[in-house]
Length: 120
Image (cartoon, rainbow, N blue to C red; front, side, top):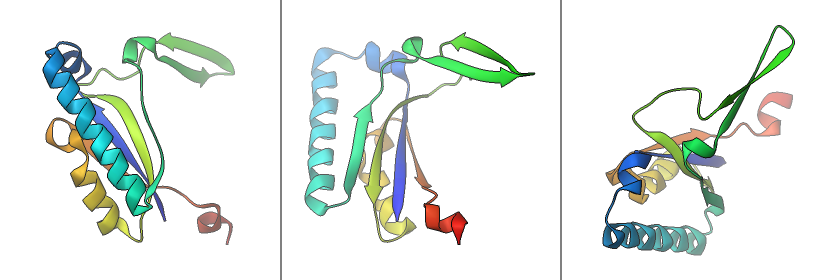
């Protein structure tokens, strides 16, 4: 089964972190990504640009409303993701707990709807 590991961090804290701390975090993510790949669990993953680069779109009464930035004002922002393959939710949660963001922010582990889940 596929799972999304959604990474939430305080992007202001990351932007203001000293260079050596940023390098440590990036090295931790590099090691984590390699561990996922070596295990065969890795399907995809990317870091996202800050929320200032985001655009939110809503349809209301047949009209498209475009908002600059994220819709919700939150303490933590969606910073990136991994898509993994895991045998069950417990295994996916173990990978989520190993993600560097789990110690500085939040990692949301969410199962992906497979086409066969709702077509059968």
